[in-house]
Length: 264
Image (cartoon, rainbow, N blue to C red; front, top):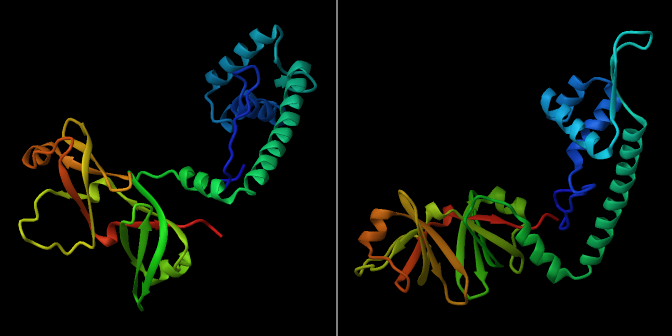
């Protein structure tokens, strides 16, 4: 399936014969060389033989045969059993892809569920990911500012280039995801009468602290149930006397926010 697909499934035969094994068989079929086939499948020479021998032992008959010299030359060839196995794999793969496409077409008829799954399918190192609706866009000649409103009513402001905003086709009412690295978040427990320049200031309550050797991940629960994680040095945790139940404000600058929207 394509990278934009919502459904993914790994096909395995007998619980252990996967795509990599059959890539090796296909390469052997095409090249007649265990060396070239192993490189094609991303395996070492020894690893390829171990894989073939283990499968052959379970099949109770060899899957490959080797020949040296002669009129046809040397090399490694698939046996009839291996050819049958490879043929069955290719047929099952086609049926598997058809099944996934059919189910994705069915899923597309439920846009709310499809949208939820698409948001959840994004893989990124950013610890904080918030789904919301773009409620304001201010574009200038060089930079643009977008406001994303979360389900709990909180607003996250992101700054980007005008080119980026145009490429994302940002406009009011569009669904978007705000991504913020935990290292970009500063926690404040007492403003001491000062105002900060950072546009984003989300108040919440510490709900979890995961202490590491050097730093800790401090999780704030925001009104509405969303959570936000900050990476704080252990000295910082001690200095702020952070513990579960402590009220704190997560502060991060607008340019620390990345915005993602569904591809058209």
